[in-house]
Amino acid sequence: MNHPILQENYKNICKKLPPHVQLVVVSKTHPVAMIQNVYDMGQRHFGENKVQELLEKQPLLPEDICWHLIGHLQTNKVKQIIHFIDVIESVDSRKLMAEINKHAAKANRTVKVLLQVKIAEEDTKFGLEVSETKELFLEWMQGQYPNVEVNGLMGMATFTDDEAQVSREFSFLKQLFKQLSLQKELTTLSMGMSGDYPVAIDCGSTSVRIGSAIFGERDYL
Image 1: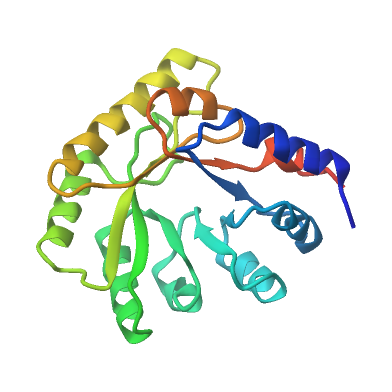
Image 2: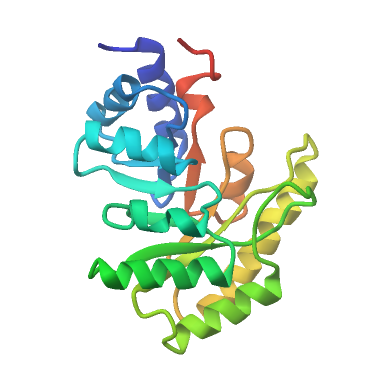
């Protein structure tokens, strides 16, 4: 079943993104049929927030989808997704990193991750402090997590209409990204969602997570 509005939204977003910026379509709360529709237009990277929802959708969709876990991940749920997850964008603790490494080793896989850095002023956002990020990155560089591949950083800006503040937060993360890349070149800086992705791209984002600007608001159907 085709969704003309969905297809038009998707095409419009794709036109606005520079060639070097990856689009991760955030499919949380949206039905399999709509995800399939976007897949049929050529999209392969999709992001889900919750493990349970991901587990329900993944078997019903094409095997070549690259699934990104973009929400907070509890350590006791890592083993449920480790066999198929492509990128875990939300590594926000040493404990989680260790758990991913442990289960990836059991599955004979190396799993790609992003370290989620707390850049927003809101208390509700998860993420590592800058010092924790540097320590965890160093531990990884020293070989403590051999079944994990740190590809870059992820961050969420404060939910505000103050574009200058959002820009400051994204620019701060870009600077940290550059610092860590001096030790080992990182490829992915995941910043920007439907409401702030143009600012994120201006600040150096290489991957954006967009849902509502494609699917519409949650009551789209």
